[in-house]
Image 1: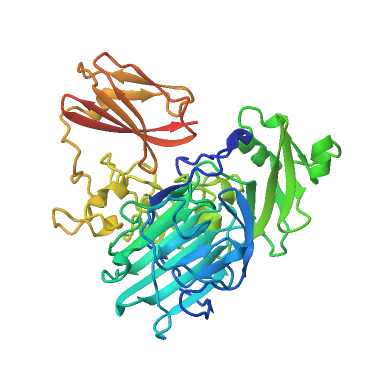
Image 2: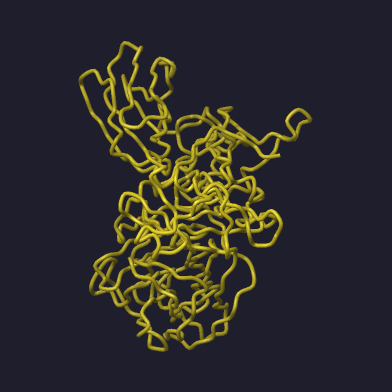
Length: 509
């Protein structure tokens, strides 16, 4: 039976809005390295492989690539000129830098690795279902030059189809401090070295880490609109209601969107698709074109077998259509660019969905999903599972990238499931109901009804991923917050007054 919940899913690709090609950011994600069969790559020390074909096109810093090169020193290179060439091993510059020896690359853990001892393996391959396949490069138990097997690194670089998101799963990294100053770096860098980003404390240096994962992505960057439907009879064809796409692409005026089967027709405005509510795809996948406001956007229609759990998160793919509009691709609870059906951490709280998607075990709630804070949002879709105002991923107090092993009061319950534990948040003597934020959802302004009789001193607004997006300090009575500059999505508001902290949630339409 399909579960229905309060909807906290909004798209970041609305109104045909473009975005910068280079605004990559990095964020921690749940640690879950790929396990499966991959193809072996055999090459000598300090060398790059020959050209390796990607199973899908991949956009990196605004350029589309269909092949890569893999270096034995821990990186993916998009430069065809690097194929079968020597791979630099000595470096001390941090990224970004024009002097960095590797360019246009994904640095899974770039360091001087030595694969001539026969230890470990270097493999690559793809898995998943189009249009959300993943390409994996796996460095397993690779020793370091000079230190050999006394310093071992294991990590995976994962390229995501359609979203063009990059993930690094770092299983283990032991530096070799007596060689090359122990230098290693996780990150990405562009073609001339002027742009690049590394996770905190993972730029060039002598550092040790294990069981952590990072995602590199461009907020609001999408190359097309995806419409993914379940295949009812396993024939690869399905009826699409294109008005669903129109409502997503132009929510203020969906009737202003016209669909065409070819780019030529869309360009000159001829032969529009007339049966938009019941359009049968003619291939799988198939590209049609949405035209509106003088802009044309590709719409990719795809049909998948929903008997396959695409992200292996134990939630049936058909049940991940949270907004029940038939499109699996526009349900993205944590707004990370990966739809829920292909995301193994649907709420982006660093607790994997297959851990949070748990049914009650008593006879009374054996079919109800766990909802710790009883806010009508099951834990696997809730980024604040215990409702204490502290996002679950911020309750990783030992900073190991896994909130599930933090139990600061040693009572056997993880802190992220216990509202009484909210480190860094004051114990409230003011009832949270004394302050109301409205309207919720809102479009332009969030009004504050403050019945406490005390002045609000600081208001901080955070995105669902914990990024601070607005800070307001005031000594005057504050009655509203302008939110018209924020993107659509879920936000958290921290209100500070009289040395106390109150936390709220709102939706920006």
